[in-house]
Image (tube, rainbow, N blue to C red; front, top):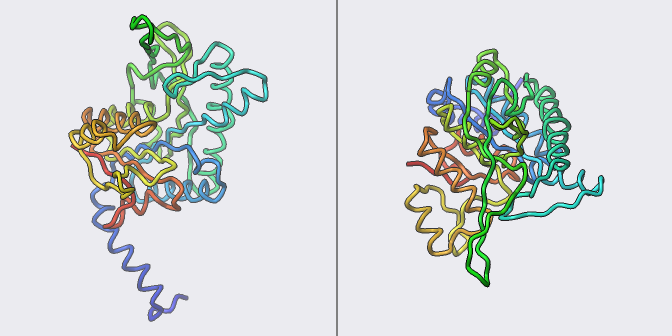
Length: 298
């Protein structure tokens, strides 16, 4: 039995009390979590992540996990002798690459996350955007300007898509049954072809469609940093536009923040760019006063 006079026991009780108003506020709401990067490759962080989503489910919040798998796809393509080419951070995806991506994302990775959640005492269902008409994709179009002629040219990225429509019926059915959807970012287009979708983009579209209380993008950085390297904890779309214009944010952070802005402008209460390398980062962000990442809201 715990000693009621032990300071650590009191600290645990105070932590629960601090979390109470947040638990009450978000009961019955949905959190969409994009899971990938370093956190996915570290067994200890994977265990912590699984515990986090099981805890969210246990306190009446509906976690929805959308996972990536770029490094794992790259490793499998290399093993099979298939070369990868990237344009603006997106993998040019021919038919063979699309088949490998689906095999890795909907197969090995998806079911491994389901297994982690089961190991933490939860019940998860592994699906992709193909299942139940969850996501209908459209082909991504990219253009580039020829440096000599200055003529814009269309780049064919192959079977790379983006969400055109989201039907949340299957997610709502799984959550109503007390289970956790784990979604691979693969979907069918209206042309009947299979498309690989960026996991951040997929998570943002689902968060908007379902009216999520939070969209979490777990990354390999602290969050959005100012030019001095300090964490910016609270931003709105106008702030983000200014930070992009003055060069404070650049590279891979730009599409992540574009996803966050789109989600909050389309129906998600708020989005958070969060360091997935920190144990229990989601719980710290949601259930403590100090938070742990960069919050984006209207």
